[in-house]
Amino acid sequence: MTRLCHCVLGVVAISLLIASVSLLVTRVFQKTVDWEVQEEMVLKNGSDTLKLWEEPPPPVYMQFYMFNVTNPLEVLNGETPRVMETGPYTYREDRPKVNVHILENGTKVSFFNPRTFYFVPEMSVGDPEVDLIRTVNVPAVTAMEMATATAMRLPLEVLLLLYKEEMFSMHTVHEWLWGYEDRFLRTMHKMSPTVNPEFGFFYKMNGTDDGEYVVLSGERNYKDFTRIIEWKGKEKLDWWTTPESNMINGTDGSSFHPLIDQEETIYIFSSDFCRSLYVTYEKYVTVKGIPAYRFVPPPSFYASGKVNKDNAGFCVPAGNCLGTGILNISTCMQGAPIILSPPHFYQSDEEYIKSIEGIHPRKEDHETFLDINPTTGLLLRACKRFQINVYVRSLPDFLQTGNIRTLFFPIFYLNESVLLDDDSAGKLKVALLESSFLTSIPYIIMALGVVFGIVFVALACRPFWPKKEEGSEDERAPLIRTS
Image 1 (cartoon, helix red, strand yellow):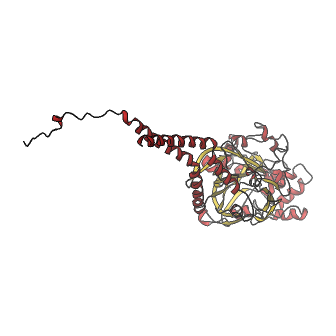
Image 2 (cartoon, rainbow, N blue to C red):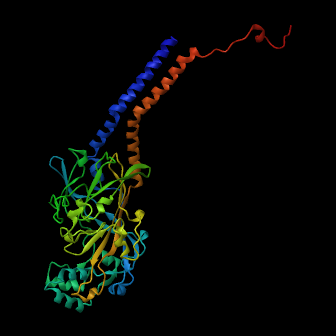
């Protein structure tokens, strides 16, 4: 009977080991989890996924850091500009998806994404309606750039002198961001109704949307989850000089497909950038105890079109390529000489950093990154950071420009950030724990097989262990005899 039990124990151990190896090789439980995730991450009526996508729970914050010019007169005389960073001025950003419609048998979804901003005093350094910032007079500079060497040069110069417009102007943070009525622009509006009488970098962008999006639901292919296929009724852009640069690639950056791999290149379309972006894997991180992959824009993304030919399509006009880290978006800004860069010219050519005093790029403060849970594709933490600059130069036709150097003048940079809230993090942890337990079953079976195997070997070898000698009868007798 004992021998039979030993044999059964050995067979069980071997069977468990074979079963665990088979399960690991065939990835049965991992495939089951992957299938369940793929089935869950689809935008369809009544689903939790659609509700979370329409009303994302984590708060989004938009922080503005302004550059105040401290030596305007010296700049006009050709000296290096000095700027002092002031900020943050923080706004909570609500961005629900509205007018959502499921299209074409559930394969596509259309929506609008309005953004509303609410000032958060406790997360800010001051009052944006009081704090004054001196920086480049963007309306005047834009008008001068457009009118130089044209018939409008002389009338414009008269207007600039009449209204005492200068190269630099001072307004509150609120006015620079959300708009103010400008006397010069009001007169220009009378001459040309297409000119807006008010100016602000985010003018008419509070409580409004940036156009209709059409995305794929993920019904046919999980990798197409929320991938944009149309924006404002168009399948491609028309601002850039090559078909590749005009492509609308990826999602809007608020959601991603599940089962993300470290080797993937993730694409994002941003109307703020007027183009599609891409990020690549940098490292493994955890956010509130949840595993995540960190993705960041690689150096090739910022490289000049002279160096990276894939970026040549973003040189406007064609062939006019700027340096590394700089993107001319004037074509999608009605001709205004607006230049995008990372904050403080991070990952940009050294010449841009040295051209302005007060610029100090740091990876931890100025890099854009996304922390994504690879199983679900949920965004756990992210910071989208970019800087608004204005191209300035000395224009002989206009006295206002003086002897200013040719520069990409920093106006402000923003940090749009999101962090998964505690309630959502708790729910995600539970879901991931359940899937982790399921995928761990083969290892549990293997561990049981090893334990049973060790017990079987121990019992099988027991007859061969040396027996202790019992000794003679005299040796076993008591030391003290009573008789």
